[in-house]
Image (cartoon, rainbow, N blue to C red; front, side, top):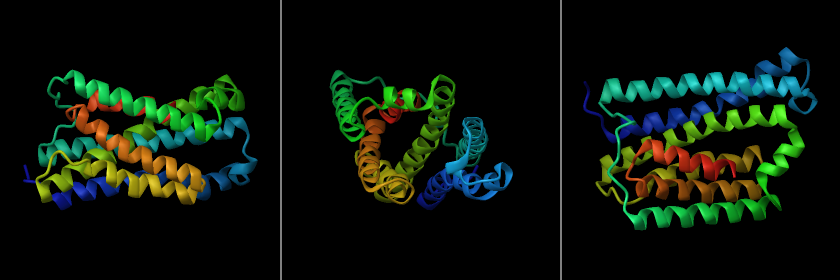
Length: 216
């Protein structure tokens, strides 16, 4: 088993971010040829198929990175964290509440309700399955980024991972979405990093909290 350095974990964080971009290869490469038109012309079924293909790619990439980190570096992402204190739960509650407020303002209403009415029940379900896998990759960027900078600077209480998420996944939304969405995702990335530390690096708790913040 190799003793991992900061650069080893940073490479995994970059790979997790690059894996998010696999969707672009589908949406702007293979699928327009397969479906005979750009994304704006896809039917509901073609959009659903896009999400299914994307989830398969994302799930495979995530499984590989998690397994590689454990087998090669001895880093078990599923290792249970220490019990959380009341103040940690309270701070997480404040972060979730703030996230919901930002989401409500940026969407001018409830994101879930608006997406449900925009997509209909079937498409809505598949979109949220897609969010499940996207949250996994964002979390991997966060966890591996945090591990990398802790190796370098030995300051475990600084949310390095959140900063990495903000400057990768967050800033990426400026190019794939719009300025407002980019700003919101950058702020969200920073909040995600704080949640991971507050949850004592327990990946199960972190994932559940991130998913709530992510979709609501």
